[in-house]
Image (cartoon, rainbow, N blue to C red; front, top):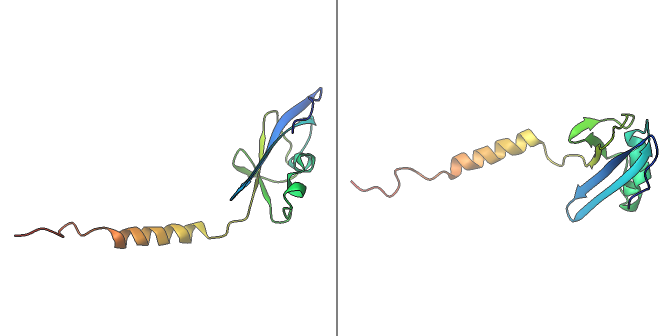
Length: 110
């Protein structure tokens, strides 16, 4: 869904992705529009029945608040809260790799 260009405005994209769901909406907004304006105009949160209180925002992967003004060509990303602590998950993966390394001396005969 694309809106017609707005004179003295800007074009931005709002994106959301989750397992089995992907939404990408390009919008034409007036100058001075904010992230909150783009999210509301995209209709993604309503269409996908997302809990706005749980969503966080980013512009090209950098966290931003809803009142952040947008620039021409920005990609507003709606992100979900983390379901696991990334540091803990990394430690668990590392511990698994250490234990699962094959014995370098296994199979050698003297």
